[in-house]
Length: 152
Image (cartoon, rainbow, N blue to C red; front, side):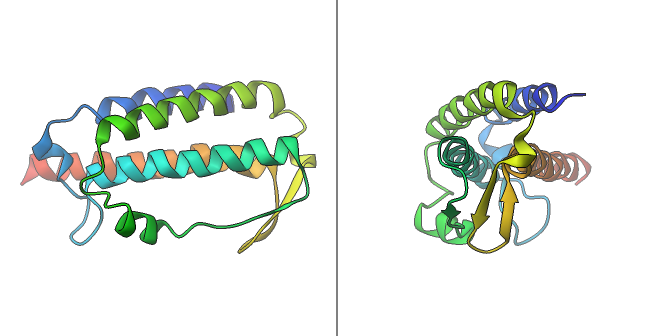
């Protein structure tokens, strides 16, 4: 499966979870971890950050791009109460743009480099791949949270 196909598939699966009922949205995959609702808000924000990085590297390669602290975003942006409709729209728009950009720039993207403020030298390919990896990782957590709920 190509990266673009996988991005489209994970987008479709993710969007369904934004429409869960309020009880399901409060479920967590492990005690003390983010709820499904908080994961979905985080996914929208992280997708925005990754989308911006991708656009920056395409437009201005070899720059330094700063990390973001997901826990500070969670805390200071109050993920437990952030409007889910806004996050859903944000996720969808950013993912559509990432797909568009991947269709045009993924081939050869391993040659476009940038410096990440925490992890050092990275490539545009790394960042495209991270969008998918990050989303899939959180989908596993969401599926787990929902399966735990049905078992309990």
